[in-house]
Length: 332
Ligand code: HEM
Image (tube, rainbow, N blue to C red; front, side, top):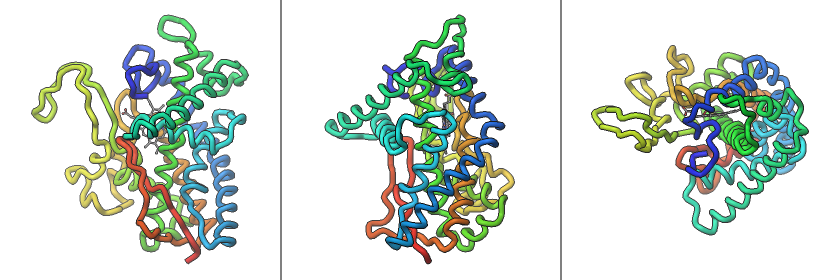
């Protein structure tokens, strides 16, 4: 992760072991695997929405953030990574605690609580990596087969650090994207019935949300060599906070950036997934999950309308992550 003491693996790795480790991730989440995952995502989405439907019938409403948006990416990742010995609620709790610990501003007491959860997560991952029970074609199996530039196998610490990042990156951010996609789609006139029918409308809506309201709003980078940027001299080692979200609302790139306009010719010219050597290798999976989730929700809950909470929408507001924490719906 971004702390100085953690083992360099993916996003926090500027060494020569990064390209190879990154290749393990990009190969694992390649286009074929994402395409093959679609029926799995559809099945899981269907199950979760059926339960949401039952709760709306019984209680009048349901929060699609906790019952659907948050759970779907976790269940998908568990299937893709062949993980069965932990329940989704625990993985979500561990992942969210890690996000808050590394990117939030918790009080000392809260830090302790979060560190305990992140520690449990780390211990579970260490056991999972060390037991060697993973099948050869699983992600952990691919890490075990991987060789570093000097030919050495991966030490368990680095394998755990890579898994730690993929588990967090692969579920929390995607859940956050789905929450925003649903909320925005529910209030956009005429969109809900359209996305239930039109394949193209779904993908374009997801992309506009990524452009305008991405879950990963900022990202940290360290300056590798002295450079001048926008008239500012940046010395090597300077820490930067890149405003990724701003790129999607740049009026020099997007006409009327505040308008949700799914027919933009340059719809993907945003930085929601970063850029360069660390660009998100899960972008295709994230886009696919969000599209399947939106279509399935619009089809499974055709009469859904957003229920406004008394205190507005609670938002996750961490240094790099922003998303609604509630998507309560009832039949309209
Ligand atoms: C909406 C969902 C997602 C968003 C917005 C997102 C965004 C990002 C961003 C901004 C970065 C840093 C890019 C940079 O430094 O230029 C990143 C890196 C990364 N993401 Fe994602 N991500 C998402 C989903 C996923 C998924 C589903 C996975 C895995 C299955 C994933 C795995 C990773 C990994 C491994 C890295 C580090 C890559 C490296 O350092 O080479 N992400 N992501």
